[in-house]
Amino acid sequence: MAEDNNEGKKEMTVIDHLEELRSRLVRGSIAVLVVAAVALYFVKDIFHYIILAPTRVDFITYKVFCEFSIYYAELWAKWFPDSDPVNVLCVEKLEFRMIATEPTEQFTKAISTAIAVGIIGAFPYVFWQLWKFIAPGLHIKERRTTRFIVLAVSVLFFVGCTFGYYVATPMAIGFLANYQLAVYVENMFTIGSIISLLLMTVVGCGIMFQLPVVVYFLTKIVLLTPVFMRKYRRHAIVVIFIISALLTPSPDVFSQVVVGVPILFLYELSIFISSAVNKAQIKQAAKDEAEYQASRRR
Image 1 (spheres, rainbow, N blue to C red):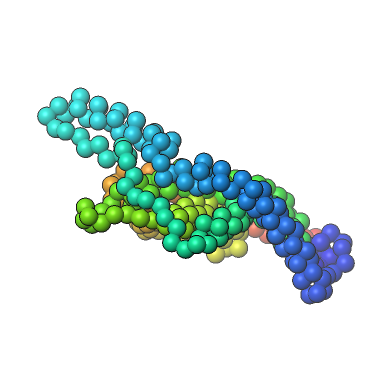
Image 2 (image 1 turned 45 degrees about the vertical axis):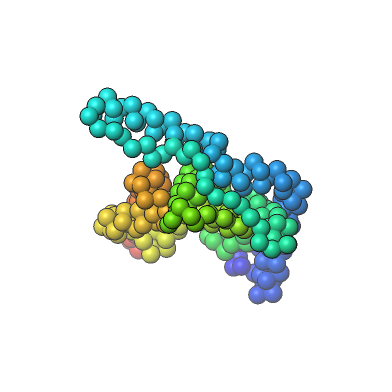
């Protein structure tokens, strides 16, 4: 790194950079393996109480949605006594069976799930290691403005994962488990397909919730502006609800709104962040120009 960017430290060669990157990746991998080993030790409890919890009707999300649906039905009956509200949110049963189609499937899925838990659990440390590799290449001012980046990314990731686990995943499983093309077609899901659906939804939401951070950096490098985001807000809303429909295959509007509204909130928050960064850049540019003009007059 150059001296002005690394506070007087000696400039590193390409080999030094590669060695530094290798060291960071090794540390991150060790953290993942440690968390994965702990998860593998408790893998049966993880499967019963976490992975497979959304496949049971006593899962907390189904209870909350059912209570809301009953409350809504009571209000509907009070406001429109001549009509009968349709209770679409109460999941009374999940019509499917879980199976393993290969002799090694349960064992291999236990290992792969433990590794996935290791990656999710060690995510803050892994990202911190990567950031420690990237940060020395930034100017001192840039490092100051991004000093909370690891915390912000980690919090958004876990909030997104929580949203995916408690909201998006139950909606997807609740719909798919009870959907039948014909009454004589029985749903039998492999344990691998359940795990894949859950991990894809949970991790996907965790990544999707990084939108404010992505917008922050794109605005910093002048690839995105708040004007652009406001101009294409309507297009973004359409895309957001398309994503909501993909995350929740349930055709009812309520499910798509429940998933889409938080993403829409993130988009609006991203506009606010982009606007703040843009104003700071304009203010800094004016300050630099004033200092330059003052130096010329001297």
